[in-house]
Image 1 (cartoon, rainbow over the protein chains, first blue to last red):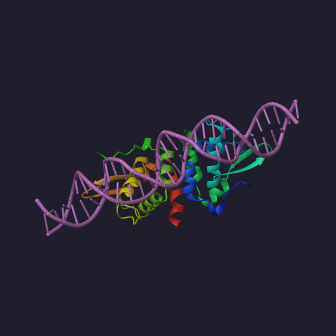
Image 2 (cartoon, protein in one colour):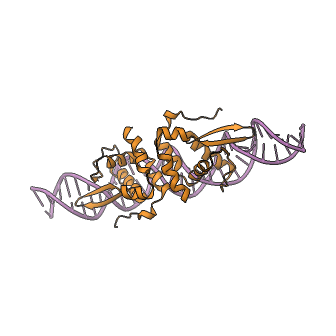
Length: 102
Length: 102
DNA sequence: CAACGAGTTCGACGATCGTCGTACACTCTG
DNA sequence: CAGAGTGTACGACGATCGTCGAACTCGTTG
């Protein structure tokens, strides 16, 4: 199961908006955007169980918002900032600016 | 029942993103943005029933995306462009640019 | 090998969503 | 007043969502 990611051209606006419309996921994306370093799923201080965490990361990945790959025992995630910027210019910044304040 | 609208400061990012994450609603907003004129709910060429239409307009209104008021027999809607721009600068344009193409 | 840590898979649950049809309310126009 | 047009209220439905727990896999480390 080689971790499905949509191509840049396949990223759908409604899927991205839906992925970002959940507070937990919005927070994940905000953290991911704050320090550009890829992070392991467990390092977000989210108060949800591991299975819920897996679910949210899958939604983000399948929407094309993040990229994931294994690295040893952990699985790292990072924002697909360039792809999102190419496909929906300005969208990520517009979403993250207010999210950073809140 | 005087048509609940959130104040500018009460508009929530996740609610807006959720409101825009449905294809029908995204299309409504795109049409509303295309010609600035307020429009009646029935004039969007949507292939959904009246009750579904009412539902979508309520979601958009309660999220703070549109404004509605009666005018005679009809009910007009328009984008709350200024409020959205003040609260989430650039968001609306970022969402509408690709939506206009599609 | 055994134990641990990090994620996944697989139901399950209550809640919400998008859609519909029917019945109703309101406003304008004969 | 009677009708037509426009929108609402209220259930209802199947689908999806966000969450959980328990059992599992895989890599690391003792």
